[in-house]
Length: 388
Image (cartoon, rainbow, N blue to C red; front, side, top):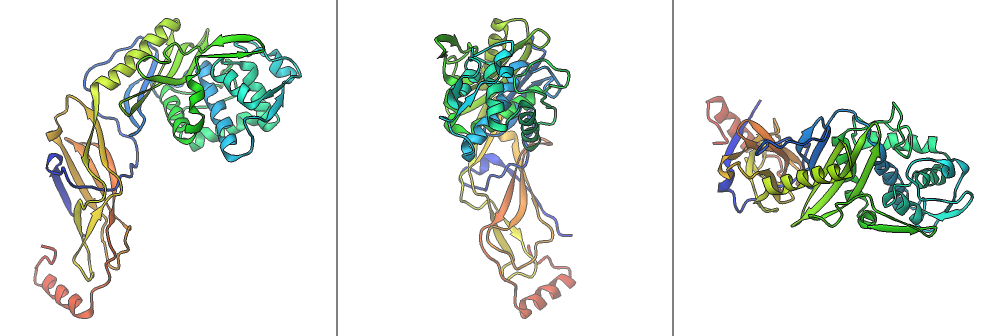
């Protein structure tokens, strides 16, 4: 089969463009050794979905109240779909009222709005609010947990399983640091209209005012998300920060106290902002290369991508060392439709792929007429490469 490979130094492509369609996340070489006393840690670049750091990142851990982020995710999904509204009111059951641990201090039998329950979970980490919300949405916490696990599957959270809506200690209730970064990224991406709740520093309900347990809010661009603590799981936090249009999501867990979790999360975010950079190598809309076509009215079709080619890489990696490798779909035979997939562009650092994007045809290419086909086939018989 016909195969071409094209290697291009990216610094020679300042004005080219191709369509951005990331197939998967790639781990890239770390610019320096980062150490943390956290038992579990992960750092994710939000835009490129690149894992920048991982310590036991895929290992199952006790998430404590950080798993309430999935409870919130389900509620946001219900809000966006129109199944519930912020001003809908749910009645507090005896089960919710009796729940121990951190509380919103709901009264038994009281009617509470969805918005207040969400703020009670996000700001106050209320276990009573979590159960009241779960029961109000699906009728029972058990059914709600089913939705949590289904959502985990859909989001590709391979190391997560939930048994309750609160994060209450249970042998089967687990997730991983990397899974939590993915969950946070999905929540920010899918429900931006509700994300502002995570930045609230205090919330008062039933004449009781409680501060957000996320001590990093407002520090270094941090604007969310959720803390957690149990005796067995230790102190943990999912923290997201936005600086100069870059968003990072950090997770640390297994710390001894609130001060440690805040410090380690802040260090991890600072590491990410200071040691990695974006570079736009090509603008959207320009042609990146030409792809050979068999039996076409034209011998080649221009290959493009639809968005800017933005690459995240360590600051200590010279831009000149990054190359591209283009693998064409084989064989590519006319007719070709505009927008048809024609190949894949790999961004390379040495032998390592750090990003892949799909290439698409810029225009329609019809079939060649009988005379052209005959002439080209004749050339091929005599050893000529018609695409040279």
